[in-house]
Length: 118
Ligand SMILES: [Zn+2]
Image (cartoon, rainbow, N blue to C red):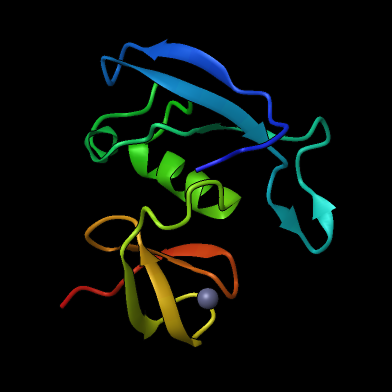
């Protein structure tokens, strides 16, 4: 993958125990306005499956939070398996990126949601 003109910093993540690349992207826009005035959120380009368990050092939240940021940033599309399904958030039927067992990301509404069980 190529990420032109981005500020990428290398950082040793003690949680994952490996070196990761970090960059920042504009925060998600809600109703046309960025919800973070100072802009941007950190995205880890080396997010791994193993990061989903414990809380992420960078976000202080479960690893899935970073998976969602990465999916939303579109910096590494193609890493997620795509499934056909109905988005729990917007109800559209289409391609969903599967971030983990139940978490999916909808291209149409740019929202991550949990699939209903079963
Ligand atoms: Zn959707």
